[in-house]
Image (tube, rainbow, N blue to C red; front, side, top):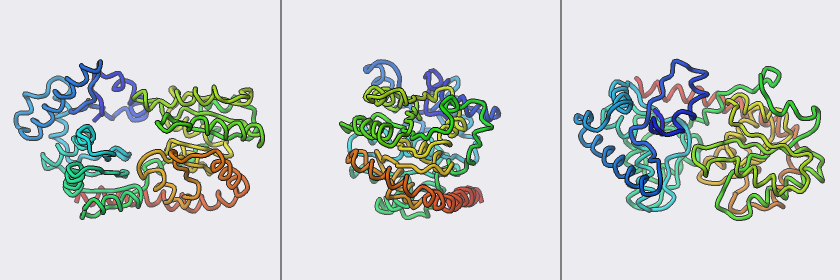
Length: 384
């Protein structure tokens, strides 16, 4: 089930890779979708979506009055289901106690709330959690997490956040689903834009993102220029994430960073729009280092034994994920970022490269086993 309505452009474009690799999978529209249109239209649609969502929760036997066309099929499939799983990610949080954030967590809880209401088996799979602010938001979240059939977090920090919230039920540690992926053999890739670069030349990859903190792009530009000029590495700027909202489109950050670099002859930018997951992962295989804001760009690099510096921008996922790998020394807080600190971490990694790769081999094997064993154990425990 998508996050989007069938008329939203993201519904058509957001699942191309999934349906290409798994044609037997059906993508259904959301029962509580994001509103579209201008500001006024969005507010009206949001109220309509909210009213319908609450009515369905209260009176599921009257659902035929609330859903039509493809949404009716979504509802029918949900009623027929044996198990409802919320995939891994970081969507369960409320950074402040506002009504807007309460409605936000309600929207993300909603498919699972319907599952609970219909007495289905429900699982939260490999999630990151928090922060949770506001008495009402925290109480709602506490009740929800205690009501789920199976609960798993992808970092110990998230488990502690849930415990502090008052969640008493068992929580399984299940590392990020990306750890299921195998390292990429670049020679087997049909398309890899970095193959067009000069072979044998050392490179450092950046995956920037837009963020509210002033000076972040300028700081990255300073470091990228230093890496290029002083250390002699090529610099590659990758737009790892391209949506679905304008705020989540890294192409804007890549463009801004590129424009600040004084020497562009040894800088390459890559748009991942036409690449699937394995091809994106293949971008990072030949790098000497990745400086990543996007968590999955960091994981993709590490899976291929490419050392990484992770820039943590919100919640526990980045810091917690790097701690699980024993790499907390290579995390930078985006709100306290400095070129001096980044440069020091770059020097450390480049001088300890073989030691870090040896460490990675051991920790990755451990996390990959944990991702598979704990994930399957969680699902089986709920089913049984």
